[in-house]
Length: 360
Length: 230
Image 1 (tube, rainbow over the protein chains, first blue to last red):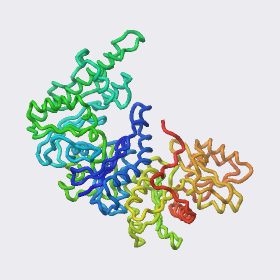
Image 2: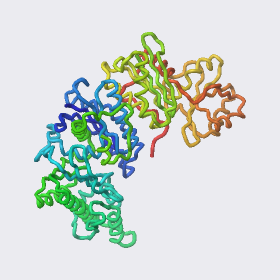
Image 3: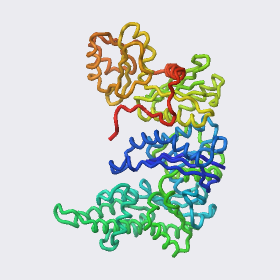
Image 4: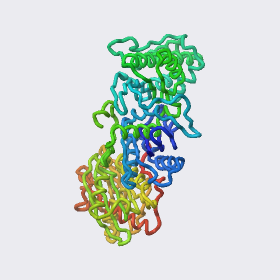
């Protein structure tokens, strides 16, 4: 089954062709990072405008790279319809509906968070984007999932394909949002995740002590909070120098390292706790922050101690992409054979993962 | 077979036009509010079915490019870009500015009467976008610089600055704008102009463009923005 997938939920215009949910035939992403850099974050109207410009070339490139010369060579279309920026989602959804309308191909609507989860199911990449490592067992449940990105930080238990039980989420900022904000206060640049990682590589994570929010809070065992950690990093930074004296590059690196260590420890320990509590057979980490090398290393070490198979997608599948949307659509169509979207499909800026089971 | 789509404002309109017979087959205009994404293709399906046509019969697609609601304009343009991908052979795609379509029903009569025609839409927050047309040869795609934007008093001041000729005003003339232009003796608000813009006129303009081989690139088609964000 070949699916053309489209993803425009935030600031990446992406299209991909996926075969049987596991093999990437093409995966094209047009990033808008440079456009949003001057705003220090994603500017929704700028993102929407760029999606309109990029959507057609990106889809054409994805079809060409996959060797698809006619829509008849495809079996279905898939598109992200939430959560995300409504103006951005509208471009992808209406383009996908337009293709479906004239080509007659069935359209599958995919939750962006479910897409991130299924980035772990992609087992075969392309020559330019290979996927290595032990593939995930596609049908071995339950699976403990940590979704960690700029907009989301959630722990969920996956009991079957497209079946989720939400265990916890952030009470305030998403982890990636905290990385962006701390990077901004340290003037490290945008996007914050890679900037923090780069700076932390030159720093000492033990030089400054930062809190591990909610780590041992039994009332919020599987919830997160990163707003306080961000504020602690802000107060620490302000107290490092006197008057108008700027902080040194080494101080910045040490603060970045301390912040990264605190965030990673909370993410990994809560994931490990949940995996044990729910007898997970496998653990998956996904989303933009899962590209962070310190998180990947710490998670690998911790899950190895628990003898739990850990799956984290290669970095090119951690950030927003359409390949993951195609994978999710495939497994969703298998689990729920009559789940095609109608012509009145709309977008939802807020679309909780837990609603999928009830809606299917 | 040409399908014309207009969701640039809260009014949505679709038209089906036979390019070989040069005639309008069907037109549907409705108050879409904010349901353009939900309603557009269902309405298009019904319009085609009423004329015993299928989506695969479409050889051309026309769309209003704005000004208007950013969201509404992008819904129609994104839909058209997608529809073009799904059609074999690739259809002709034509984008026409919203106010050019608004003006179309009155342009010939205005030119014959040696009268300036001004088309307008509400732009939200008490503001309007407008475009003045003088003479018979109105451009098919007026650019952003040709458009004006402002409040009702600013719009009225613009109209008052055209003293050498009469002005016909058409489009989304609401009560506030009516009140602002009422003292202007040179301005006539066209009767029955109302809020509705009809895609049949968009289809007619697109047919002219196709006849002149003046079509757009589906890849490069984008909304007509009157201002930059940020």
